[in-house]
Image 1 (cartoon, one colour):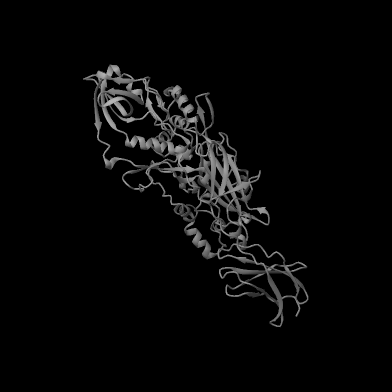
Image 2: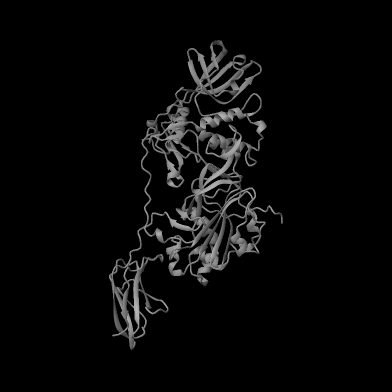
Length: 603
């Protein structure tokens, strides 16, 4: 086997490494169940659905079945995908995604899962999420704290202070390093050849716990892993250095060069124009909260199966780029900025101007909505303030929506909404002009037209490709009449966005504040009866008792209607320690009672 075997095909080594072929104990860990005939039957029948598709459905994200799907949505980024051969993934900027499941097995009560996130080297893993909540890890990758809003979050992923989940990162270096843990535990499946060259991935190891602690340690069952990732390092033509960047113009340029994109060479690129586009993207605007934010920065991820036209269209919209082929045949670009036109067609040079009817009431856009990815909401989709008339209902013919996965700032989406509003409502014109007065017309974005009485020094943004009429030696093209202020944007134009939704965590399982223990006669011997005040019928009350001198710990649980519980027979004359806790219907435990009761087994 070649030494450069990629991690992406590691799961082909053995059917035992595939999810469906996972061992019984692995399936039990995944399902959060005790290993039993019935439990394993249920898990084995719907394992993949429970781990991936079920979560996917809850997130409201439909699986994309086309050969060239559109860019993944925010919800797609939170679901671990299980596919026989998942399409390779690229990441630009900072995103959150769950990745593709490559390996799953169990040994000695620990589940081992390898999840790949990108088919190239990434800058870094920024934040790890388990079952939707961010977690903190120590230097060795052990999960030491859940940042969930749940009151019981301090109990998650650890037991008696010992972590139960470990995450080991690989950033996808060109020469990868195999996971030592897999080499040790699965020498028949994982070797030095499984380096994962150029594949960014995480090995998640989850240790099993006793059934009575399972839902306390793993509140959502087997944790679903997702990551906030700083993606690919890309070429910056301003200094010819490859580095991590959130500049959307540089994302587009890299996609032009990438084999999964247009697979162009640098000789085919107008680098001077792309340098300027990167400069424009790095310019700043003051937001409503007073912060200076870059004009055109963002991030997104996609699969190599995505249609390149769709990917480029998404980036171009987010950065307001107009990409074209210049006079030298190179791929050039007009960035999203106002440039005073250096081409002014006037008088007889403008043969004709005809207005195209697009201003009737039915075609007028009165409101533009915006959907964007908000990093402050854990990279979930967010709605922008409406540009235009807020009373226009969504779905109305006069309402339009900018829905772009690349945009990650509210100020940014609002600027793109404004441009959409202006362009949708602009007067549309068809112009015929003299070729010799407009030779450079195909390489322009904005021009100036003076043709009395229709247009007097009007600014026109060209739409589509001008057509050269050889017979009459004229250019024919369509455009929209736009104001020179179309890119002007003040902090107040951002509008007042409401506060983000507040995450509400679940309450802690109520503990037993007070209980009493009384020795009673039972079956000719001595037993203990613990009495307590029931807080709610849905809770089970569990009594733990053990000799103070040491020995086996025993448990007994009160039925839901009772306010007392009795132990089995005790050893007469022995001293016992008693303490109580509650358990939810999901099996989550409260803390033990603060002060244990100590009593001697005697009447």
